[in-house]
Image (cartoon, rainbow, N blue to C red; front, side, top):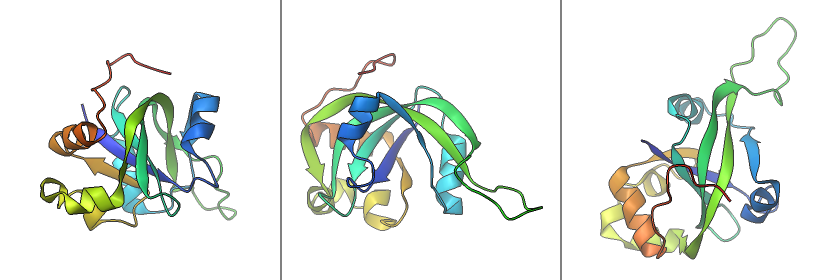
Length: 149
């Protein structure tokens, strides 16, 4: 199993929006490295839902429910192919305690986390050790593989 971090600006699409919708497609990724990470995602992988710009904190757990497929929100020029893709995610559970970017940066065990070293990417990998550390900081247990809101 792999772990991921999904960033969204709350005024565009928040954790509350996802909880209301239950699931969504993760569109609009326009960075090749982030797209390549999405290509590695498997159904059942878990991720953190992170509010960027406003709040700057991980607030919930999501899971991948559909593997990478073409991003239908991108409109390529005529006779050009669409290089962008997306995955579908579902809300699993809120974190009991939000984990701020400041808390992540102040934790030496998370100094190599992509959230610290590659802050601009909207989709990022998380190592199993980083995942567990963030869950510990959030006072949240690992969800069951089949869990969903």
